[in-house]
Image (cartoon, rainbow, N blue to C red; front, side, top):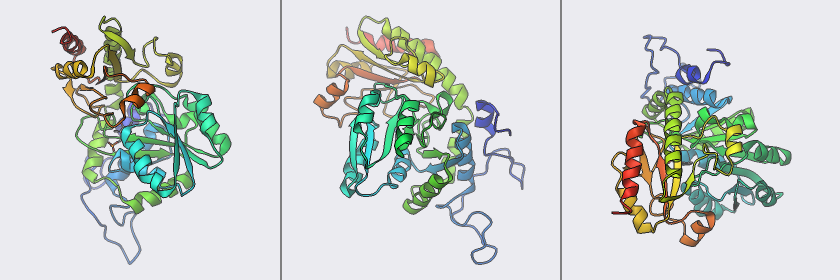
Length: 386
Ligand SMILES: *Cc1c(COP(=O)(O)O)cnc(C)c1O
């Protein structure tokens, strides 16, 4: 397959070729922990499955091709992937991160790495002056998510990456919400892309996994060292499931985004909805950046009801097609009340300051028929009046 092949062709073929012994078109699930050596220390490419496994290699190459990167590294979860990046740091180092990071990433920083003398500044990544102002001589890493969760704020990836490059700081982008179909942060100058492949890349809510994609050979070496040393690596069956997911990523993302836009427009016109957050709407404060940086608005929509916590919880419980659950990115639609679910750990004052109110609701728009989804949203919001 040519490097210049389109996204869909890469999604289906990159890293994969028919099995040479049987012709099997699907990558075999290599359920083996170890590999026979030809002579002591003489290996045919694999020695132990924590270090590497052929099913994992296929996935690592596939994800690298989708992100337009040279190297992929796969992990047992998104958190294991992020942990491996933070393992590059040492005591005294400083990190600048978004103030609306995924909760688990925030927890890893604050309850784990802070103990070892790494310090963190959490800033609004949509404010470039705030990012520049937070950088110090000892800053080694900038971590961002674009779009962010749950307010779908964007980071100008090109601008932040340029700021980092100038100062020799690593720029890392969590591309879980956007997926490589919408944007490829390496192309904007970022050094590291991280994914929770649990979400859109897997796409079917049946596997937990993570990945890193980089271009630089030396950076790849250092990350692979800690990947193998820490050991948060995925099993071959998990890799197989993600490979099956990525084959349809482009088709799914088109549908997720088309339906999300329809729902965002309907919400914007709804009298009970005070605010809608969706990068694909022209009312999004960074819509121009979204048009420049992303192929479409993606599949996540958040909206605010002028409602108490209890009323918002009642609305969330009144969906029939959307399932009330954490996580996102699967074929099935999910509804989340961040205040009582995914973001429950954030103190009320802090989250109000960060911009999200008691009545905020987050939708992961699936690929069911959009008419059914629209009807479901309407019915759930109508429960405010009954
Ligand atoms: C889910 C998620 C993670 C963590 O990934 P896991 O696979 O759950 O470990 C990290 N970042 C973002 C943006 C996520 O949505």
